[in-house]
Image 1: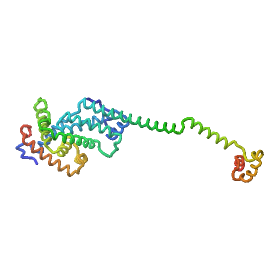
Image 2 (image 1 turned 60 degrees about the horizontal axis):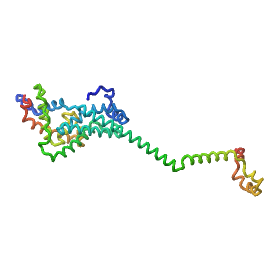
Image 3 (image 1 turned 135 degrees about the vertical axis):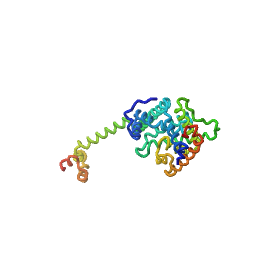
Image 4 (image 1 turned 90 degrees about the horizontal axis):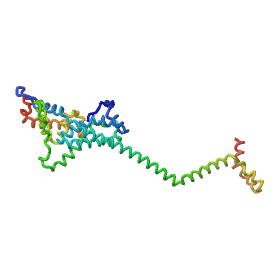
Amino acid sequence: MRMSPDPDADLSDDVLLLRYANGDGAAARVLTARHAPRVLGLAQRMLGDRAEAEDVTQEAMLRLWRRAPDWRQGEARLSTWLWRVTANLCTDRLRRRRGVALDSVPEPADAAPSADQRLMAADRVAALDRALAALPERQRLAVVLRHIEGASNPEIAETLDTSVEAVESLLARGRRALAAALGGEKEKLGLDR
Amino acid sequence: MSEDPKRGQGPDDRLEACFAAARAARPAPGAALTAAILRDAAAAQHDRAAAAAAAGQSRGAAWRGLWRALGGWPAAAALAGALVLGVILGVAVPDPVDRLAAVWPGAAVDAIETGGAFPGYADLMTEG
C-alpha cells in the first residue's frame, strides 16, 4: 500500500503513540510506515519465510497497538521494543519448527533472473540468508540488527537483554561464521575480484 | 583482516558486499499486510473506546443502584421537605417557652430554669 506524505511524519514515536492512544488513526499510519518494514526485515531474516515473517510483523504491531495506552514516554525506544517483541515471536516459531524435517523449512526465495548485476545481488542475498540460517539464533539476531537493520550495539544489547560486551562477542563470532560460509562461494558470488 | 589484495577482497569486504545487497533488498510490507496492520490498529482503538464506554455505563449503573437503594425520588423529596421545614422552624419560630407559659402554667418554671441555656431565636438576634 502506497502511503501519501503525512504531516505527522516528523513527529517522534512517543508523540505518535500518545496520539494513537487518544484515537488518532493517522498516527497509526505513520508508525506503521516507519516500523513495519524494519520488523518485517528482521522477521524475514530470522525465519527465512515471507508468509511467517508477515504473520510475525502483524502480531508485533498488534502488540504495539495494545500497549500504546500504557506506553511510558521516554522509558524505552520503540524500535528496540519492537525488535525485542519480534525476536521473541521469531524464537517461538523457530522452537516450534525444531521438530519439523529440514526439507520442509523453506529455502530463501531465488530472485527472478534479470540483469547480471541484479542477479548477482540476489545471489549474494540468498547466500547470506543461507549462511545466516545456519547461525545460532542470538548470533543471527545480533548480526541482522547490526549489519542489515543498522542498530547500534547498545540497542542490540537492550533488545537481547544482555551487555554490550556480549553483543560484541556475538557479532564477532557471527561474522567469523558467515565469512567462513561465504568464503566457499566467493567466485560464484563475484566476491573474488 | 583483509587478504592479499592481488587475490581479491578479504572476508570483511565480502561480508560487507553481502550485507549491502541485503540492505538494498530489504523487504517492504505489501498492501495486504499494511492494510491488515491498520485494521488491527483501528480495531484496538475501537475495543478500547468500547471498554471505556462500558466502564462508564457500569459506574452509572452503580450510582443508579445506590439511588434506588436510598429510596429514589420520594426519599429525596422527603429529605428536601424536611430540610425546608427545618430552615423555617429555625428562622421563624418565636420564643416558644414564653408563649407556652400562657397556656401551660408549668412551662413558666421551665422557662426560668432553662431560659438561659436554650434562648429563643429572637433572644439570639437581639443579643447578637
